[in-house]
Image 1 (cartoon, one colour):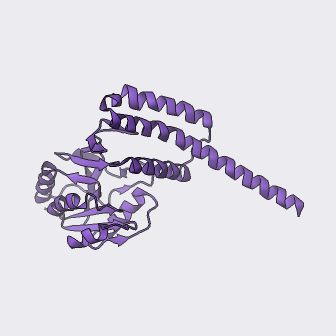
Image 2: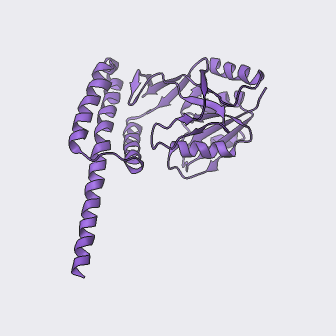
Image 3: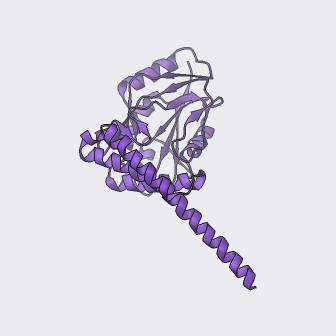
Length: 265
């Protein structure tokens, strides 16, 4: 038998917290909440369940998760976001796992995560298919989240298993959130990862993404929601190159202006 700390990240998460927290309380011996500056009722809802969020300014998802992991009292952690809801089979599997012999610290467990966009389950959302199977339950002394600017993953396990049941990932619940995350993800990607600045590559990548993630994936069958996920993939593929080109061009102009100023002095 072993004890489990749930690590939960929040930011303006009032929409789903009353669905997210109760299932987590059924599997957790401790819940660590790291909040990145909520201005809605997130903190009040957490306090209703006896939770005291720790504030940390957000830079990257993996970094935020690792901060929560470092605050855990127990070696085994379950890492969740505030738009992910455990179903009954997942809860029962984790409870049974905890009640048994403590596993090897090199083992980890993957959740089965079904993605929902605008309230509908979808088959693809760039750059993953739904469901996907991220590692979320592991021993904190043998695994950590990597620091990719987007699409981070847990690294360090030597063997992973799948948790029965599934998790509802209720993301992109409005058009505003779709475009807000599209903007923040691509900006973060360009800031922390070297992307070749090229408008031509951006156009070619966007055309390829449209065919792959809208037509070939069958997203067009989902009507308006499919159009949204297809547009998201197309714009994401273009914007990462466009922003790299824009920032690179801006830096070149700044350098040129500094050289010009130095010559005039």
